[in-house]
Amino acid sequence: MAFANLPPFSGMVHLTHAGDGTNRLWLVLQPERILVFPNLPGVFSTKVFLDIQSKVNSEGSEEGLLGLAFDPSYKTNGYFYVYYSAANPRRSVLSRFSVSATDPDLADPQSELVLMEIPQPFNNHNGGALAFGPDGYLYVSLGDGGSGGDPLGHGQNKATLLGSILRIDVHNVTPQEPYRIPPDNPFVGAGDGSRPEIWAYGFRNPWKMSFDQATGTLWAGDVGEISFEEVDIIKKGQNYGWNLMEGAQCFPPGVQSCDQSGLTLPIVVYPTSQGCAVIGGHVYRGSRIPQLVGVYIYADFCAGLVWGVRYDGNAVTEHGLLADTNLMIPSFGIDEQGELYILTYNGNGQIYQFVASPLQTPTPTPTTIPTATPTPTPLPAVTGWGLGALAVLLVMLLLGVDWRARAA
Image (cartoon, rainbow, N blue to C red; front, side):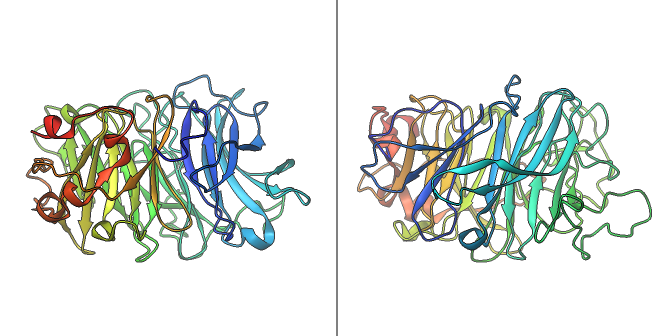
């Protein structure tokens, strides 16, 4: 367990850093707060960085304060961006705040500049991931608006922002012009009613997304409906299929054929028999575990399974199970050094960290990939990275989980 002296936290949904060289971490709690603390193993307390309880609606299980991203120039301009749910009317809000002029561990709650408000018809499938790309633009993930099966058809409707990943310019904005449209966005000037903010579309609920800091590749986990969970590589102007497709299969279940022309299929799919909701993670670029460098690590919320994927820019080359944690995992975290953390809903709301371990284990079975997606070569991690060289601290400590029994 990382930060063993910190108290348990309820509703953790995001952990990140500001890239300002201060080696601090910011923890987003879904009800309404962002906490900050030094990235030190012995840290014993946190500070409230931002509390916007009066603004946030967290009545639905998927609503609340969901996203946080720091401006690439945060060290000099003090700007950060949040995504939260609001009520009356129900909507998602993207806002910019500023750090306090006198206290680096405190935000100015009066500094809010609302950049965007998106009406939400239901209380689920909010998306909410925020990430700055290497191009300096802000990317925003939005679910299809909720209910089940996308009843309003948002996933395939480019005239709505829902069911999409957006790309906007938030630099040098004003209250009169809270964001700008990058001129090379794919649907600028399309002339068919498409929203120019859209970078890619056809998503159900892209809950977590992240950029590989070395390659600039954008990864996302899109939570499935009934049968499949998926991981996608997000590319300009692509249609990822929902609700014509779920994973690599036609939707709804039982439909034997569907028009897949122009659709981009996921690079990884797993059946809901192995979990209930994919949790997108990060490509590991830390130094503690060299065997994992370049591996995209993701998980399932219910099953607690953690997988690793290698992608060569064109296809998945390796894919395998890294750990079976028996935890509910809502999100991963990352620090300034590129080290990864796991946030948990159960296990007393603790934060865990990947560490090297001498633990020897039998070879786990690689995740089954449906035939509609490329079948990857088993990971060297499964035979070479092996959990003899890698284990998740949460597997080894606290829980008393016998990995060898679970992997057999």
